[in-house]
Length: 114
Length: 113
Image (cartoon, rainbow over all chains, first blue to last red; front, side, top):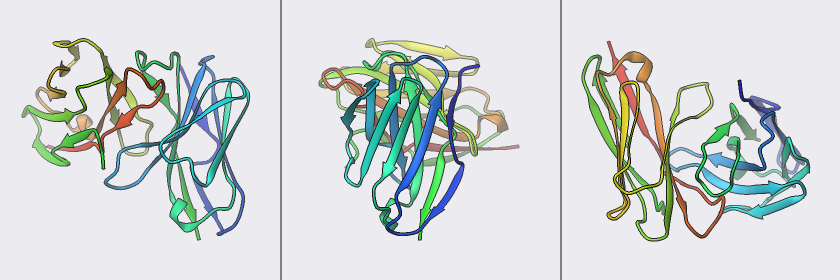
């Protein structure tokens, strides 16, 4: 069974903290994505990566960075957490980056910044 | 502003009834349309990936159609069951921006026994 695993289901962090969200996939997929989901809005793309050490900004990259040192792992970093980054964060991976194959999602990390 | 619009935002269905809902997306520069089902406390799971105008796909009691010329897709659930309760997401992928899916806000379906 294919799997995308996010390191935490729930996180509570303080304003100004550096936060790491980890995502691991076991499908040997080239492409990995980080989204955030807020009520009334669709999933919004923060960053994606199409290869090790390669990354592309999504629609809302401000305040975030990413790291992909190994093919199976894609980390989202909140450099200095703020309350407006309280959200549900979803990681996904896909075989191709062109949209022709389905994405597999992790279970999500609900982050609260206080 | 969402380029991909889903309607209705939510709907309640009696068990056994059929229902359908819509995803609207930009028809220009289109490459693919995805449907996902997202059940509470679970990960979103892919239902369909559609690329061709006129595509129709089916998975059990759920089916989808695609009209790329006018920019819409319908998802149908036949004979709804309580286990169909979920949020259904659609996502459009443009032809020239690899990886840049645009998701709708979802249609939340509640099936009551």
